[in-house]
Length: 118
Image 1 (tube, rainbow, N blue to C red):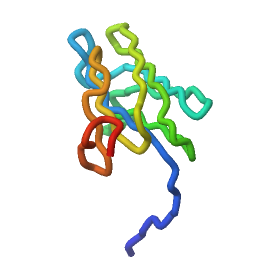
Image 2: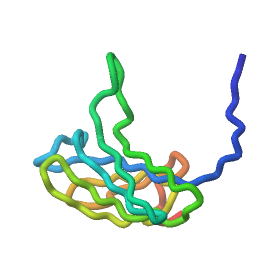
Image 3: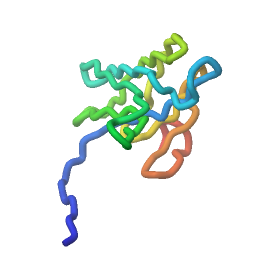
Image 4: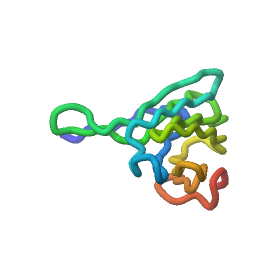
C-alpha cells in the first residue's frame, strides 16, 4: 500500500539551522529561539535527543499560517549571548551563525540567490 499526502495546505513557515560560535557548541545544543511573527511570540529549544535511541531535528521550525512576514528571531545562544535577526522571507531554511546573523538560506531545497530573494 502506498499512502500519499494530498492535503492542499499552503501555509507558510520558517526554519533555522543554528551554528554556534567559539563559546557555544557548534550544533547550538541548548539554544533557545523566540520568533515574533504574526502578532505572536513563539519559542523553540534546540535539543540534543528525543527518547531512547532517537533524536530530534535540531532546526527550530515555526508555522506561520497565512502570514507572509517571517518576523524577527531572538536567539539565546548557549554562551549567554543574545542575537536578534530579522528574517527576510517565509518558506525558507535560514542558516544563522552566532555573532554573524544570517549566513545562508535554502529555498525549495536549493540555496537562495541571496537571503530574502528568489
